[in-house]
Amino acid sequence: MVKNVKNDSVRVAIACQGGGSHTAFTAGVLKTILREKNGNYEIVALSGTSGGAICALLAWYGLLTDDRDEAVRLLDSFWTENSASSLWDMFLNNLTVGTARLQDVVAIPEASPYTYPSWAQDYLRSLLEKNVDFDKIKTLSRSSSPVLLVGAVDVLSGKFKVLRNSEIGVDGILASAALPTFFRAVGIDGTVYWDGLFSQNPPIRDFVQDPDASVKPDEIWVIQINPETRKKEPRSTKEITDRRNELSGNLSLNQELDFIDSVNKWVDSGYLPQGRYKRISVRRIEMLRDLDTASKLDRSQPFIHSMMAYGEKKAMEFMEKLP
Image (tube, rainbow, N blue to C red):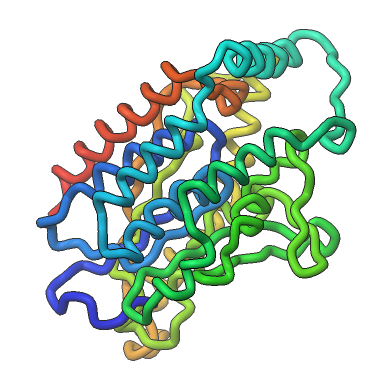
């Protein structure tokens, strides 16, 4: 964890939930937070899973150079380049999203990602390497730099994996984003990994593992993609599928937050030594649009831009309410 920031600063860790194209919302939130340079909040750690891991990586990489403007530029650059812009890409995007929505109506055979070329995964790799010089991370990272945590899951053992700081190469990010219905598992050091959505979405309890309470965050800000509640009972096949996806995406998140809540209660009750533990506040920035699961695959420019703008709006409202 980061040491010796500003003595009067509130130490903040930002956790970015995964959710495909919906995490363009996360990019908008992070851009707004990063533009706020005069506040009393210091970013000491970031974590993420899947698309949230990509956003956390881009913000973190900019912060390693002490350049928040660069972090904002990287978030803009990635999502602009990742959006479907050519006629062929727009056709493929519409086909992918349309097929995903059609699966709620008729039975469509699913194809293994091992039966077709890994073009999408290769393209994502090229985008990441274009925006982040992974070879430079070790030289940029200092003891005072923010921490980055990325979640994935070991396909064979089922064990959760949290990658940290300089050990997070491009393969680590691809592993965290390897949704098995679309991407092949990613091999790292002889082990294969799938999307962190199956493990910690995103890693949070790892923020507080340092034995020194003074370097733990004072607050954790969660950028939540999957809505926590719904206003009406889902009844159609599509509504049931969408709600099931939201609940499964929030399951590990709420387990992570329950751990923080339990520690806070033990601190308040005096059961834990003050030198190692402290109360940590949790705040959420929630994506509250009523969107279907298939839209998590939508890379159309209008959708990506609207999600980023929505994230900026929600982050501004959040920042205005801070003490």
